[in-house]
Image (cartoon, rainbow, N blue to C red; front, side):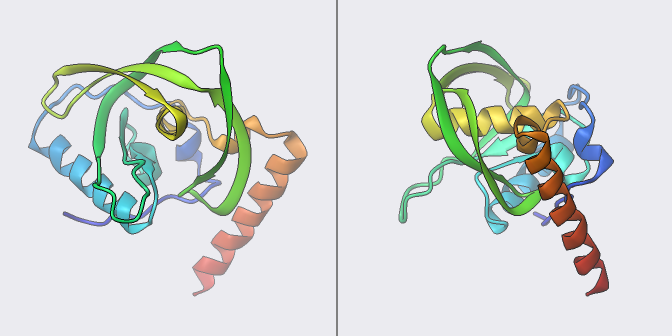
Length: 173
């Protein structure tokens, strides 16, 4: 497995819609493993392929955060929300591509998602609470949407400026 570099906002690749995955092969399985390793190392609870510069509809996530909890890694290929609850939840979201920045985002409390696994088998599951927020956040990445896109323009611009400054500082090191 190989750790991948995570793109930092603003990067034009983070604003592009991704292509569906059509090849279910060892390369896809290796990419999914690399993404999980990168996500755990960051550390985070979700990672979408465009965050590492791969413009395909692939996400990984694991929302088990309890100390000593058993990891529950998930790989979702070509995921799509097929139902969402009317009830809404607000979570303070962050993003590995927008380090150190957090904001409250309102999303449906529950969603039903269909996807394929790395072998191409079709899956469907309902997610709620943090899992629902995470899967929606990661699917947003596949559509070129960031959590800051849900914020008021002034706050979004402020975070973008902070990220530009952060990237300049990282380039100097």
